[in-house]
Length: 540
Image (cartoon, rainbow, N blue to C red; front, top):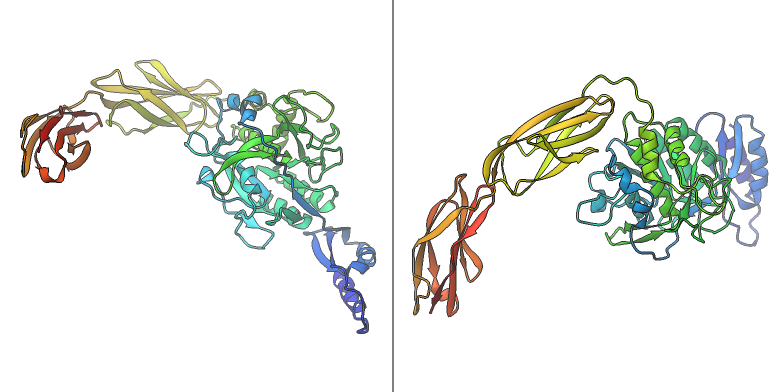
């Protein structure tokens, strides 16, 4: 093969007589494209680049020879408060239809991704192309923030809300701890992510050098059904940024809360395709939430919206998702972006309005929790399952025929307030609707107990007893229609003894407590309702 011959020739040329000479420049890495198979990487001495390139290009099997350029993460870090982008772009409207689906995979090609709690259970095994192993853990922080913008869990009491709560992240490390990475690693990462079935590939990185290795990798990923989305860069100029400027890539610029261009965002309506909020809250590797700004942040925002669209049924292809994003983008001031600022609600509405195949098959639905016959009280968490051969439109929770909750995305969850019911059996219903207006129903019966148990002290020193000494005994009994779970003896406000039953004689060692001793007994029924006896005060 000519590649080996050229390399051998270059090595021979370097074997000059051992005379004193200036230190040689670092070797140059060339990427050699072939008509078949993956590109080859070869290092040549800096003073032989032109000769090696000419010789390699002479081979009919070689399609291109180019330097292996370096890209860097597209970062910028001004400080702006709040997750303003969610409402500004209609993501909250889109959440009324879907929170995303676990079957949707977004590949994050970056510095790696650290498994922070906000991504728990949704981080897939990745690949590290920088160090050549399977450990794609973040060693810089940039990739973890990008992944959080896309898919940080919501309603979990920690961190921030990502765009696609339920989608999964495929971490692909192509940038080192210094935020830099070679085009060859990035190209290999794009191909690998596509081979793993990524629906969306997020590239919050780039550089000003065009490249055939990146173009070929994007073409390959597109042929495998992936939508490639990349940052337009943060130089504040019209200079094209790659891979974003490759036509098959959706290039993303950064927009402000007033839909203007952030000064640092690159621009050009002939190559920047869409804009998105350029500052978003994201968690660091240390789980600290802060502003994450730049086209690096705008890009995962769009990737998250694309993932929401990919979560619908029937699943749209990449071209349909891109068309929905661009055709519904809000036109914004200036001539700096092609389609406008992303609007998740409008994009999802357009996609959901696409014609469906004839649908005469009803969905299937059932309760997940609580179990049938469960004893419940207060605000009850109810979960349900629903599936359909085309698409589930919504699931309703009903009580006595009245809708008390609606959820439009899986997992279907409701909060039912049973507080007005003192003690009775209640049957709840489910109705699942598909987009063809077919309906399925299910019911489940629960026992409701919002009434407190009774408890009283039947024997023991009376309230106000003085000069109390030694160990004294307090006997208490409790009752409830659904049974007692436990009784507790409290002394001076602290639980000192418990008993799982309806009657018990508690011992109080009075010497352990102060001059004034407050005693009472508390009882819990099986539903979790609680009541207490009046406090008895004793004096030593």
